[in-house]
Image 1: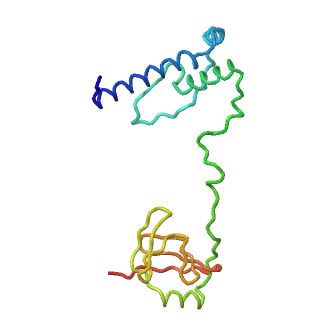
Image 2: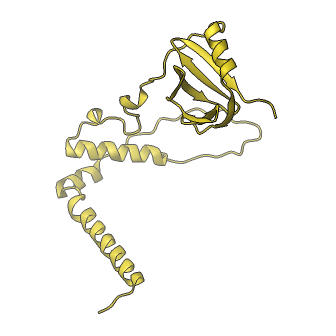
Image 3: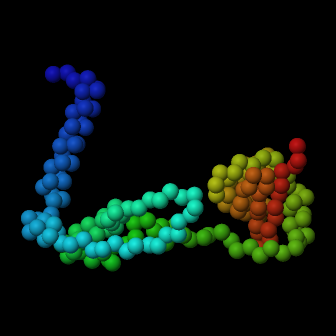
Length: 179
């Protein structure tokens, strides 16, 4: 039996759907005793937040708990029925601490030194391509990315019309020539 690509795709999707339904009903469904206890559990009252109406705002009133509160209550009931400790679960939306490291050198703005002035005199910025934190600069016809060095100065920042290079605490800004 030869099936077309479209028929094979349809069959694969149907198999995935049936598998997901079976997993939901068999594996993820709560035990029979937990269903009865969660269904009989009262829903706690929802705190009311006072809102000061504006003159131009329409009068909107909501009877009963908000969907957010109901969902939170359902999660708490689910965790209690399974004996789960929600305080042990890390925040899924918090960025890992490894991502929060700042490896950029610490630079103190000081008046430009003779070394910085000499660097600026010797080098000419001809083009920039700012791309978030990973830009590209063309200095003296040579392409440099953030983190690369030129004459001992490291490229640390690429802006729309300028770049910043640092070396041993010295900060030098090269700007594009006006057209």
